[in-house]
Image 1: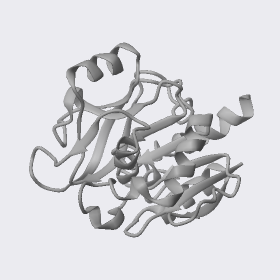
Image 2: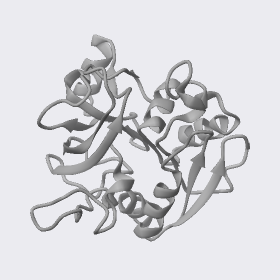
Image 3: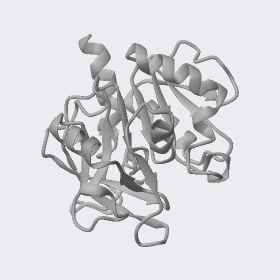
Length: 231
């Protein structure tokens, strides 16, 4: 399976996402923001970072990059798309996911290992989890506060489209403690925490077993492989 990772000007975690794809057992394919070519990949990752310097709004300029036209078309055809942090912001700006992200309520950049609860384990990117499972994923953002109007929030909650919810202290003021959402079809998922930073022992969050041993993020990438294996 070939999973494309798009690099934008200001991307920071594209190489980390490529490594996560490789650790999961797939082939990472580097994609460039200025191209109109997805190179026939089976799934797409929009990585974290500060695309175009986060000018205007985080993810707003990147959502209008040439390659995003192809990403939107692919998503609408059912191709799995994962947006991580800045990638989540792009997905909302491109209207592939509802709502938006604003400055953290605390007014500062937040970087920490964050506990999450898996709310929806039936998407292309979460099938390796169980609903209600608690995981720990690194988080680092300045504009991570998820917002949506009351009707949208009610629809997301009612349709089971909240993919992840923050546990413990809400790090950024997201409404309903929402850490990630999915589209109706379940092929597009966006979240603020960074699963690519929790895929390899020795480099992930601390666990009761050992320092930096957490690999909860790996299941995101193996989940999408299993989705294709089951098709």
